[in-house]
Length: 365
Length: 117
Image (cartoon, rainbow over the protein chains, first blue to last red):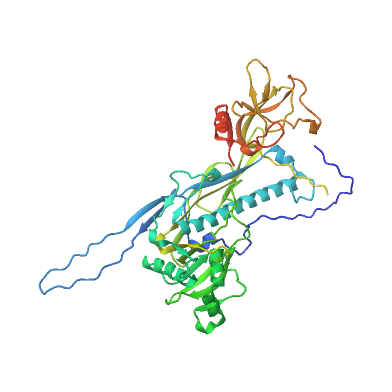
């Protein structure tokens, strides 16, 4: 097939590249913010020993009577299987013949190098955004639910942390008795009732919640009369928070009737999340949800061992990582496959220290 | 303004096996499913993708490209087995076919492993 042009062809092309949701240098993903601790190994399972105890008080006794027995339970051990994700892109003869966007020369070497780097960037962004979405969803739902091709659930892969039902509440903000303050207090009460840590208290809010906050008279009044110090600090121009891509600081807010200050954050990366080819784009953080947690709590980003090919194409086991690239060939016809792999699970040490409120809002929000 | 979309590989997904085989006189597009009827001595388009034993792998042959397979003996390259991508399977107009689970199972029985994307 040939293309004809009756004009003088430009010798130099400009190249416009837009790969959405690519993390720039110096930034980190929200998965690293929500799941602070990394666990990397060559293992297939993550073993978490838990000791959650609320010791009861001591009992008194008469003289010469015996001691009260206090039994000791050493805790529980849980093994979590770490699921695999891997993708490959074949580079066929047809693709090697093709022009690659952005290559200014016509030589094979430049095109091929550009093709390799573009494939790797696309794989990297795909893995990165998947981690963002799964980190958020694990916090929201209390489950780590790895989905297969076409978004299908794969039986046996889901990890259900069995969050207490009292931590998943609703707030009907169309009810005249329920305003932003009331809804936040209810979320806080649910969070604290299960022993949630009051330090580093953070709420990530969907856009409906933020709209509600920014249009509630009580909150606006406090903003104007800052001496009240109930809304302590708010930036007119929300800055990026903790260097996390898409996470921005909205304000610091004191829940009325409590001594706990909450950092309110919004999350909106450059583009929406598309789970698989042809899937409907969805926002990373649902618009009608608010999620309360302590940013200092122990939550693990677990990377298990990955089987890959080394330079001499022997199978090797490498320690878990965000992404492991390797390549292999089929010999006839010559086809190279670029493969990216990871083995990943998001595991909160105590899921009962995360509370979610799903709001109902009036249509104008 | 002339816009050109660069070629992309959307059919071959893994290791493949090919052959050169006779085709029925018709138009052909890369990725067209083919069936074989005993006694006919040629492969032909399988619109239902339920009797597919091969996939057309040669250059597009249609009026738009200036060539067609003009007689029942003309040979061209077909893909007889291996791993292929769902999105590369096209009808006799060159448009993508919506692949169903029935089609995937029928093709798998003949060694064509359709990978969903």
